[in-house]
Length: 257
Image 1 (cartoon, rainbow, N blue to C red):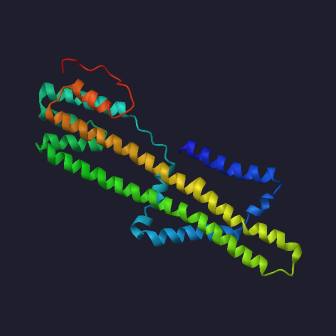
Image 2: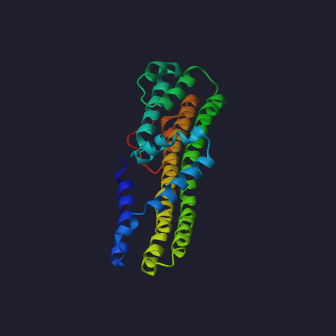
Image 3: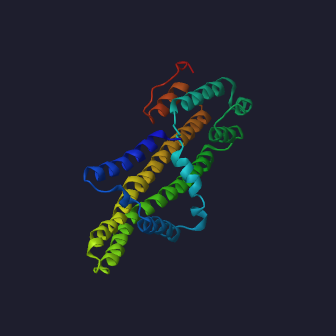
């Protein structure tokens, strides 16, 4: 569970509640079923109208990714690539076949299997990069679904306020209830702005950030696999791969490798 994300969400809710208390507004006005219906059902409708069923069905999985605290440490995977390169230079590329079963990263394992099978470097690069591009596209669509909801939400809030005002102004006979009706009408606007700009659009950006971190790891692996196939020295591979990330080497590599 991504606790930092939950902290951000609670801070957002807290800001709204605290602001209303300081202004002397009743928190009971937030319990507005009509406003919630307009905002949340409207967001669902806009998302369904924007994306095919196959993408909508992925939303539960995307929510799981959003709230999962995935961190990427690039140094360990780089050091693993360097160790493999030393093994390949000492014993040859075919010696890697026995080592493949010990690899935990499936993408690195796939890349090295292609190397052991004698596939040309251009083909290996194309195969692996195509997989990364397909993954990026899936991630982009997932993030855009949240962005669609986030950009739609404030406008739905305005729509809810208009509907509320129509109802309030249509009942001018009850002057005592007019102020409460108008106040209630703007709850939909509050919902729309909060859900859009505090939740959904930031959720979209968070998914993009997670995707970029994962893509960087895959690009490191691609560069490392191609360097191993080319027989580059370990120090050269280390310099190349660590130049892609903001991390320091964790191991001392054999300068003669």
